[in-house]
Image (cartoon, rainbow, N blue to C red; front, side, top):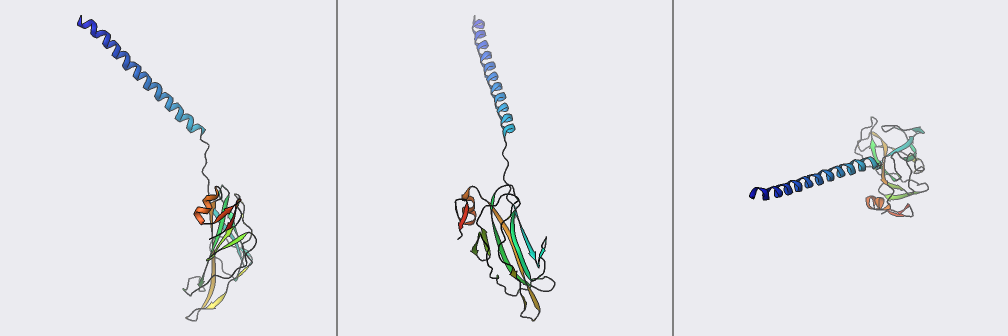
Length: 194
C-alpha cells in the first residue's frame, strides 16, 4: 500500500516540475520576442555635433594649415554636424618668424569690430547668437583684421598670426548651451554671455 500512495505524489511532483518548466520556457520565449521586437523598432540616431572654420587671408580661402598674409577676413563657422547647434569662435594671436616658428614675443589680440548677431565673451571668445542648422554657416564674424608686422626684442622681423578655432554645442535643449558655456539662452537665441 505504501507504493500506491507514493505514486500519486510522484505524479503530482512530476506534473508540478513539468508545469514550472513549461512556464519558464514560455517566459523565455516571450522575453526573447520582446527583445527582438525592441531592437527592430529602435529608430534612435545620436546627434553629431561638429563644426569648421572658414576664412580668407589676403582674399584667398584658407584650407588646412595657417596661411601667411596681412589681412584676415570673411571668418565664419559652419555646422558640419547632424543637429542644430550654437557656435562660438575663439581667436588667439602670436608672433612668428619668417619660417612660421612661434617666437615667444608677447602678443595681444587685435581689437575687432563685430558684425550683426555676434556677442563678445571676452578674451578672444565670440558667440553667434542664433542657432545654426546642419550644413549652414554663421554670418561673418567681423570686419577684416589687419595682421601686423613688428620687430622682436632680438631685432628680427616677426609677423602676427591669428588662429581661429570653432566650437559647437547642441542648441536643444537650451540648457545644454547654458550649462556647457555659461550663456543665457532665451527664445532660442543666446542673449548674454558671462
